[in-house]
Amino acid sequence: MVNEVDPSADALWESVGTTVSSAGTEEHQPRTEAEWLEVRRHAIVLTEATNLLVMPGRKVAAPGKKLEDEGVLGIYTAAEAQAAIDGKHEVFVAFAHALHDAAEKMLTAIDAKNPQGMLTAGEAIDEACESCHMTFWYPNQVLPKFPQATTRAAPGE
Image (cartoon, rainbow, N blue to C red):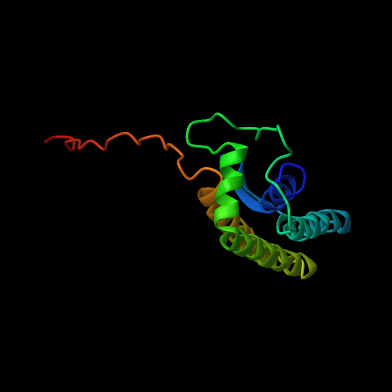
């Protein structure tokens, strides 16, 4: 995850988007052949990494190793995540297949040089990742409470 899935997904998400500021609107997308080849490389790495996730005997972490955010409230330890995956392995495999399918859609959009298709595929990648994480990594996450809405009187009331 740390060396292939996360950096590849991040690079794909960051490769397309819109920034609106006081200076105007800026569209981010690959424009040169080299930029298209670079995002394509990330899509291939992400697609192939999903095959590694479902290899028999694959473990969350090497023996004695911790996850980088282990100890954060609501996040599983490596052993807890492994137990969850082992207990619902077919669900984990389904999430990995969903990520594979989303990454293939990204590759298709890249090959078509279709930034909107990349945005759509990026959403599918995010959904596959987040669904798996909420099941096998941080199912007990503690979300901050939003401030309570207050009612204000309209001016002159």
